[in-house]
Length: 501
Image (cartoon, rainbow, N blue to C red; front, side, top):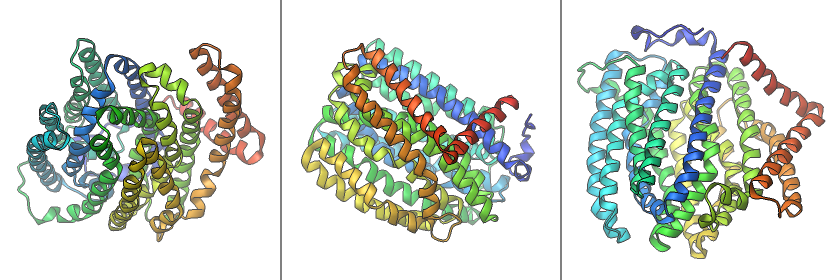
């Protein structure tokens, strides 16, 4: 059983280094468990919301979040990662960073409110004014809780963080479902973000009993701001390039196509983010503590990458080959037009989760300046792809996005991994089996499609799941090399059960 964390221990993490692997495993399982619960609630809510709301409702909210999400990047300024990565902090520094976050978040909230009239003008849609005003609350809640979240992550107290994730997701999604049912329309979608931020902030203050003092801002926080500057710079550029598609679609094609596109992207990434985000939250603190031991660092990264690819790649290929049936089952016939864009986005999503570990390596290695420049170059290529692709509609945009992501993959890995314990060879060797076996399993399901096309929808999906799972795990059992890798995951699960996690 883990020792309880006392108030005086929030700035000391020497005690976690003795059992780093155990804490990483426990933290990963607990966090993934929380994400599985959130994923289940998300899926159930998505099914009902898609039938209670219209594509236009999703489009309206996406018009606002494309801009407000960009502004909200500044509420943290990379200080959360700075606290996690630094070996030493104290009460005074943490307090100063807290107040700095609070002041910044209030300014950002005011900016979001002022942005409302501009959105109304840009999209010629009056309803965006009040949507943006309410979204401003998320900035305030985020600023109030950033340091508490960082301290919990620094202590690798993922049990507390997991319980917060579960509670915030449950409350926000249930309330949104009730609002949609009684006729609040797009306000139900707004409530998800605002309530999630509010409940998260409240619970973080309860779970983390650290309290800031009245320390005044001074030059002592500059090293933290400098560290966070690279992360913030990357996030700014990355957010712009990742959301430019929503802006272009909303401006050039309207709210309905944007609603179809954003919902397809959300549905596709939902299972992936539930796996990737908790693993990242565990991986970055763990790898940050291993920078003085390159071999252990490299081993940890490869194990992390294998686990991520083992689950993410088959998920995406399965969704690709069953897109139409999945859309019909989860969202209903009104959303069937989203199936094609769903499949095209899946091409990029196949490599995107594992490629994103580039950032984890650079952040944990302290190479935040390189992280920023990588984001800059990536934004240039992605932006060019979006402007070219949008000329050919939604499908053209998704195809262009896939082309540029695969074209820059190898050069980006060479740049991002340079001077770190990991290499491009490590990356591809680690993901190779998962990639090949996922494609083979998806091909088998695709070939079976015409045979079972006339069966009931739920039965078709059940057969797809059984067939894909049987082939995927069956192939892993065939060869000695793959069998050892599969058994390593099974052994991990057994050890967790024996420890009664």
